[in-house]
Image 1 (cartoon, rainbow, N blue to C red):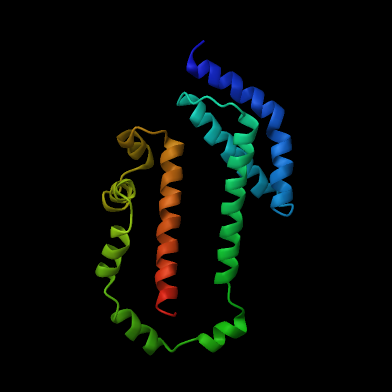
Image 2: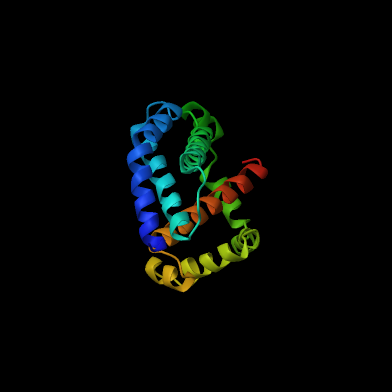
Length: 179
């Protein structure tokens, strides 16, 4: 039996055996957020399928799926925590508000080219390649997937992760400056 066929059979068996239990586990960890729990389960099965297709063998597929789903749950919780930190009550926002003049002066004083170079320098070589393809050369996702010899969903996921990383880096820079 081919690797692809074996992967398909094992994936279907694991999906049938563990999907509902894994969903309930994620649902409990995510305080009843059904969509988020479903997303985590889907992501776990996507990772499992990719690894199966790459020829990886699993001694305990159930443990792998739970561990992978848990990682996605943790990422989702971190994202929610970070978003909560970024939300400022209206009263605090009014107290922190600056005039248009101060804002304009601040923007004028920022060297955006140097800032962009600094951020890009912090990326790994693979991330720099992906950044260059998407944001410098304006390459479409399916063309990126072809160039990197990966699937379109994998390319999309890498782009999402890259965008999230860059956003986090910019946010971190903003906090380092105290603003």
